[in-house]
Length: 232
Ligand code: DC
Image (tube, protein in one colour):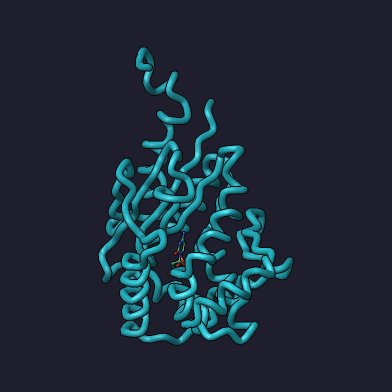
């Protein structure tokens, strides 16, 4: 059987990471959450007291080349060897600033270098915004995930409430919409659907059924002799 790379892109809060993690688990592949890497770098900038609107200061700080590793055993982000998973998810300063940091070309160049180190051996499922367009343009399977804004707000609220966070529906909606707008309109590697990607609306799918839907597309690519006999 062939090992393939799978790129999962899409809007904030539509379940990309859950789908990517479940796919990697089902196929025994490595899951990489590229958004966690952007969040980790944002946390690093905050810790260094950087003004998030100062792209020059961010670019200068990155010259320190902080170690940013997505640990696929724990699915946690390690910044200079320290687990900062809780901080990158719950610190509202990270949540509200990450799109600004992600728009800085030096940030994208640095993280691209780190992200591409993971993909050489195949068997990687990576989710983000530019995975199918920039990071793994040769991925054998590219999925662009979407869902209605109502569903995305509902899911994100459930997740945050489950973690004991108190945020309003309006706050969650504003953050999702603003981040999507910033991600889709920046000049460096904007969020966009790769030409040869499958567009997948997850609104009415359960976690299990969305996994099964994408596995049904992945399997013929992984094992063409079984699923596509006689076809080159
Ligand atoms: O997937 P996420 O919500 O954890 O991503 C956090 C932010 O990082 C998001 O607002 C956009 C940015 N991002 C990006 O620009 N490119 C990626 N490949 C992944 C995330």
